[in-house]
Amino acid sequence: MVVGDSLSAAYGIPRERGWVALLAERLKREHPDYIVVNASISGDTTGGGRARLRPLLERHQPAVVILELGGNDGLRGMSVSQIRSNLAAMIRDAQAAGARVLLVGMKVPPNYGEVYAQGFEAVFRELAHTHRTGLVQFLLEDFADKPELFQPDRIHPTGEAQPLMLERVLRELKPLLK
Image (tube, rainbow, N blue to C red; front, side, top):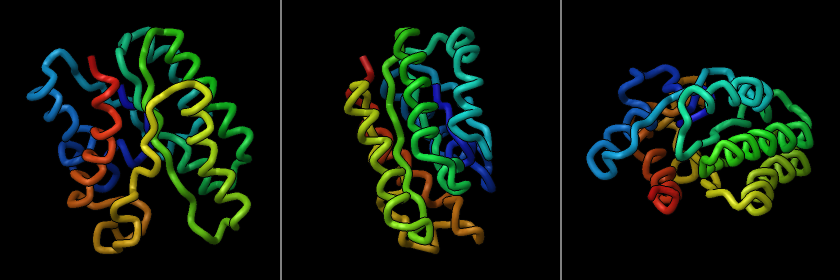
């Protein structure tokens, strides 16, 4: 199950071209015991995800939860401690429900200042280490500096970038699959 924001909800592109849909196709071929539930909502924050997670866990009983949240919190300048608290609660809830967790890291633009940016990025590493989850360091790692792979808003990746995001996630997801 993927709990994410617009980056996982395929904002601005056909949903079937998004990295989560591509993941579902790949797993159907390579790991047919898995199905992918995309519980992502554009604009979602860690607070929204935290509020939605328990019912999602009860309903879907996932073996693996991919948490791709935090980007909107960062863009809104939410406190790093609140982001950490929300993500930690989500990790604990998912693990308590028996799911393995893959945390997907994000970065904020440099105009947020070095102190905030470093603290924000560190949250994902610290939580993955503390809670022994998988970690994608930065979902946009391979192309964040390539404007041609972003929609005009320079926030949301194009359809052409989705396979890159998929590969980034798959690299860290495969060890969590049984």
